[in-house]
Amino acid sequence: MVVLASPSGGGKTTIAKTILERYPEKFGYSVSATTRSPRAGERNGEAYHFLTREEFADWQKQGRFVETAQYAGELYGTLKSEVEKVLGSGRHVLLDIEVDGAQQVRRTYPSAVMIFILPSSPRVLVDRLLQRKSESPAALLERLDRAMYELRATTIFDRVVRNDVLEDAVNDVVRIVEEGGGWRREQGDIQWFEAFASGLQKERQRLYDELHGG
Ligand code: ADP
Ligand code: 5GP
Image (cartoon, rainbow, N blue to C red; front, top):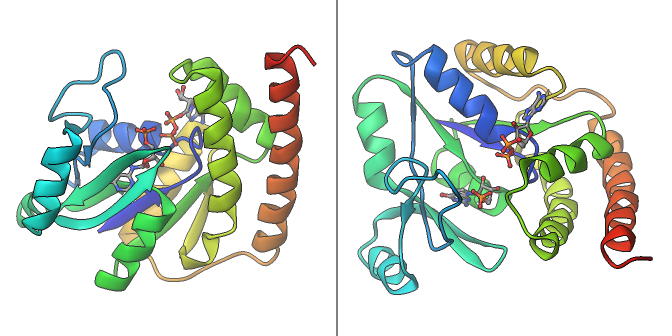
């Protein structure tokens, strides 16, 4: 079980997609359930299982989730059936999830490989999110606020992968999984996250001012 987590825009979806395309015989993806609306090009059952709130609550009652979390006002959850399907086929299962869910996975599956992904600079993170054009300005600011919270929850992750050059990040993740994971954090990681969070705060302010004509 491989957990890829990062603030929004960190690159986990891109990294997961690249790994799945390149190594379909080794890796499979756990398609999550969510109550958020599909983005352009997202197909039901592929990007997510898109559920109504009522359906999500029913599935929760039926015990179908490994973990669930709320993010930007919407519900997200990893399905047991998805995880079992991939593990049953003898492949590693990739989970692209936020940190509260990652924490639940850590408790339930202590041997999960937990990887936190981040570009080196907050400016790059914000620029990538802007380029993705998938959120309204208000949703984008909300995601940046959430990123501040996520940067304080990084101690549960065994490894940190910098996503500057995509190719390097993909290779790093694959290598870590093939090594079997295990805790290996660099000295100064926590200080880096703190500096990143304060840089991100400034980027958020810059964006807010731009959006509000300040
Ligand atoms: P997440 O899933 O963590 O929210 P995405 O994978 O959607 O992030 O990446 C955010 C944006 O950044 C996307 O538009 C993606 O194409 C781009 N991106 C991701 N990694 C890189 C990279 N290493 N170099 C340049 N652009 C990247
Ligand atoms: P997005 O709306 O951008 O697809 O995802 C928003 C956040 O929810 C991302 O951090 C993503 O990793 C996370 N997420 C997606 N699926 C799940 C899930 O099944 N469980 C949890 N806890 N988070 C998820």
